[in-house]
Amino acid sequence: MAEHSPQMSTAGAAHAESVADYIVQRIADEGVAHCFGVAGDYLFPMCNAVERSSKIKWIGCANELNAAYSADGYARIRGAGMLATTHIARAPGRCRTNPNFLPGLAR
Image (cartoon, rainbow, N blue to C red; front, top):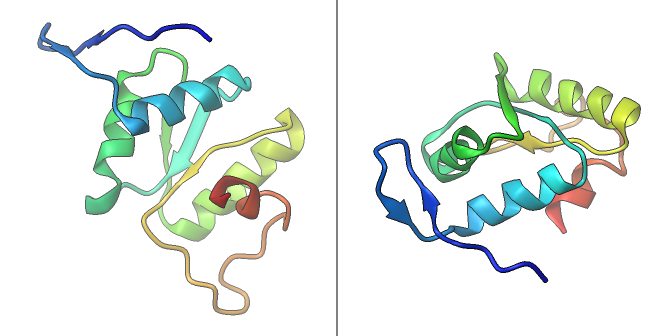
């Protein structure tokens, strides 16, 4: 296993790798180059990790449903995708995507 060294922030100060940084790096290692999502207050650590990553680009979406559909289509074409939102309602019709996609990210 490769050892991770502290990363440099945009201000130039070193910081320890966070869990969000690790998750983003692991997803990037799977070949994912885009993160679809809707930024929210509880999601800011993940948004910051995506911003710090040179391998993954943030694609902001208008709402959670659009983000889910975008990430689902991306995953169907590329084999893996990344979705970042603070909440997805489970009401019928709100989020009908590939059933193998969202549970795979939740586990």
